[in-house]
Length: 134
Image (cartoon, rainbow, N blue to C red):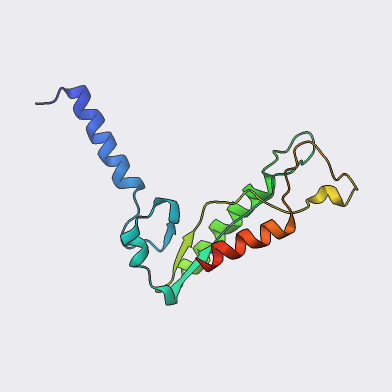
């Protein structure tokens, strides 16, 4: 038989897996945690896909460069809850894309600023279009 210390770890691990796993009744899913079978079972007519994004850019001396991404992740969670509250609807959330074009630096004419990592508009459009059509 297992030693008490090992048994305690097994119980905690089992509890954690059960607590944090997605139940079959859940209406909000994270695509990164789903397998092919779970994705195939989604009702395409009543599933909303959210692809959050947020440019990595400077926000002064005290805020993190991913401030926009953190804000958009919070908005995504709130939007997902509102959609999932509708009976029969599900939400699939993709990982946050840390890409953006331009940034607030352009307003001040600081096109090259430490902490801002922008991509060309054409690249962003092609990237999002390719993901959306998948």
